Image 1 (cartoon, rainbow, N blue to C red):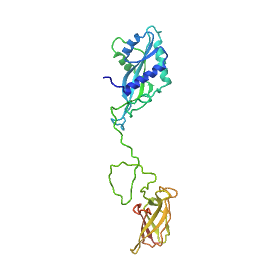
Image 2 (cartoon, rainbow, N blue to C red; image 1 turned 180 degrees about the vertical axis):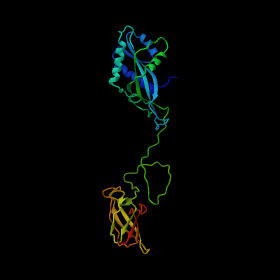
Image 3 (cartoon, rainbow, N blue to C red; image 1 turned 120 degrees about the horizontal axis):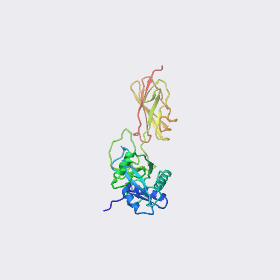
Length: 322
């Protein structure tokens, strides 16, 4: 049973095909061990051969955010060697190798896209499409000698150029379907919100749907935002910062506990002019009415049509005139 093509074999074959298209007529490109390439070259008396020998595969690095169900990337080291025809001139190997190096110097990024575009319908839809970059390397003489001496037979050392091809993805055997993205999320901060879990997917509501937004208020003190302020008796207005749905109408409610223990309520309607506290129009002026030292008010904003949608509470304390 034949083994299907892999991203590794596709990359090396694509690199060889690109090199074959870029060298002059009379030069053939092979992908094999140097020993086999020399044997093949002897059977081609009218052609010079450029052989690509893959001799090392190395990881591209440690990627902590990847899983076993995602592609990983490798760097591949290849040795490019020229095998001149039998009756070639003495410097033919330098000419052929030099031309191959000139091609890669001119286009270090291989313009072909792997796998081929348009995609093969038999490929997994998650298949990674990529390009190769060829970077000239400088392996030590000990490493080169080791490569040649391990080929066996009477193969003589030949001048070669080493390149690194990167990055080549190694696709997993199967992909796990990614979770569906969350389309929208609504955070309900109303006092009567009931926590619940549901298997229903979160969806985007229609554009004209009424969302449960909550108006919020804060005071601006000397040290920044605060939820409590102290005002002298006789103060006529306060200016809390109001945020919410811009242009929405809200009711600002004061729940008073008077200095003599009695309680009462007052309210005023205002338009929201900012969606955040540091907006230029966030401050609103609200009348306090008659106040006496010892009065305390809890102040909050709510929807005029739905009092249950009420924001956070602030505190105002009334003191004697300084």
